[in-house]
Image 1 (tube, helix red, strand yellow):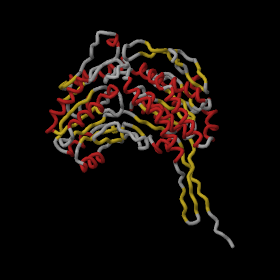
Image 2 (cartoon, one colour; image 1 turned 90 degrees about the vertical axis):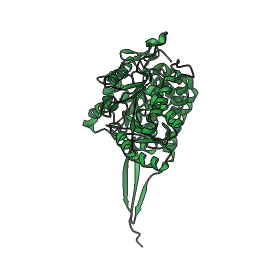
Image 3 (cartoon, one colour; image 1 turned 90 degrees about the horizontal axis):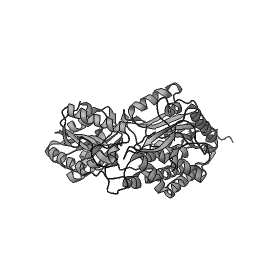
Image 4 (tube, helix red, strand yellow; image 1 turned 180 degrees about the vertical axis):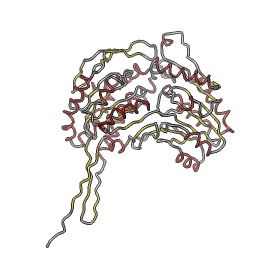
Amino acid sequence: MSDQVTHFIGGVQVAEGATFATHDPVTGGVVRLVHEADRAVVDKAVAAARAAQPGWAALPVAERAGWMRRLADAIEARFEELVAAEIADTGKSITQTRTLDIPRGAANFRSFAEIAAQRPDEAFHLKDVLSYTVRRPLGVVAVIVPWNLPFLLATWKIGPALVAGNAIVVKPSEHTPGSMAVLADIAAEIGLPPGVLNVVHGLGGDSTGQFLVEHPGVDAVTFTGESRTGSTIMKGVADRVKPVSFELGGKNAGLVFADADLDVAVEGSVRSVFTNGGQVCLCTERLYVERPVFEEFVTRLAKRAGELRFGRPEDEDTTMMPMISAEHRDKVLSYYRLAESEGAEFRAGGGVPSFGDERDGGYYVEPTVLTGLPSDSRVNREEIFGPVCHVAPFDTEAEAVALANDSEYGLAATVWTSRLSRAHRVAQSLEAGLVWVNTWYLRDLRTPFGGVKLSGIGREGGTDSLDFYSEPTTITIKLEPEHE
């Protein structure tokens, strides 16, 4: 890929706007220059989408689904190019990128193609009345995606939005433009109708993101990111009452009962706390462990945290990645200092690793395990979004559920237990959009995905995605009685 990233509008590359630099989280060095879309560029992108949308929506759903499959095929054909782009932007390991991020991108397109092509219409017959529903696309959808899983989360929204008949304008994070630039090139390569998929790059407030959200030609907004930004977007669309789908932050809880298989619970918690450097909205930042196994669990978790490997991204044994930016690294470190001032005990980590090479210019922090803080501490209330968790004991099931639910967030939770009845009972008592029992991040793409409270509005996944990206119209016909 070029070291300069341009917009993709109406099927062609558009090199307009001032440029800004993106940086390699591994070394801090400049990766590429990116054009920033001003209002005029956003106007062009929205106009291209509006011009293309009616013709795209007029295609049979089976034909749109066919385009999704072509995109999936082309992703797999350019797999290593996408892997390289994702690693350059995020610094994540090649193992994760090859096994999760890019494969899920192709799977997202294929999954929604199948769901849309097989979805039946609804009809209701009552005596001499026949009612049925048809679904129409929303029109032009703004797709705003974050930096932590840029390709996976973008395709998670692009696939259903397109197959439902919308045209879209995508704004990737300013930190991670690379994989969307490759996807735009793929769209042109396979001949996707111009204007159906547009990509603009830039910042958020008072820049590209705000211009796109508030644009009168945008009919709906889908966003994944932090809760504060979601609130800002909601205010920006309020006057026009645009539909929104938000998957926002999390301060996710994990409950470990004494009857759990401790080997499974420890290894599962290592994944749920430290995957992607803790930079996943689904990661566990609060762990509650039944008192009889509390000390053993903490000791084992801390030991495993210390064993995580800060290798280079291209090293298949690497298990820890840097933070996305210097700013985010400093935010995470500020919470480490806050934890110290609040009286936490650091059972692992708490600082910055030293390498003695160019990685010392990167954005690394140590995986950290904390204990000893009360539930009302800021460290236990605020989303940190880094490789850190706090572990606290509990004595009863009711206490565990109360502690888990004592949060303004409600995205995901984990439950570790060998008792089937407890698994069902506790899972149904947790105020979260997703609950995993004896596992984490195991996804069936047909199921609803989203959170409650500050963690979001609406659900995506399966038919829930198609429902958001379209509007139903109910048609009722009075059947005339037969006259002889």
